[in-house]
Amino acid sequence: MHLIANASILVGGRRSKFVTFHWQWSIDGGKTWTDAGSTPLADTLVPNLTLMTPYQFRVAATVSRSTGAWSQPVGLLVH
Image (tube, rainbow, N blue to C red; front, side):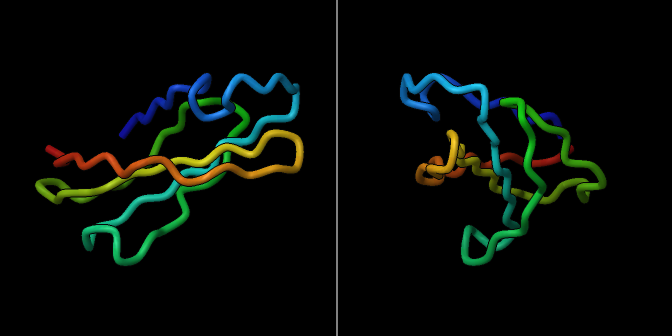
């Protein structure tokens, strides 16, 4: 799965060379979350997902040393 976030919304207009995007996914409706890694870019690849399984994904951004709130989860069915 290739995920792309809207970086300008996540960083809230703050300008910094030091931005990290943190990605998570859930298969139980958001009760538990699994880290999908962190990237310096507003996109990532999540490999090896199970076909015909509904997932939720979310992202948060750290600008310098301040981490923002998690985004609203986005639900997708992998097929």
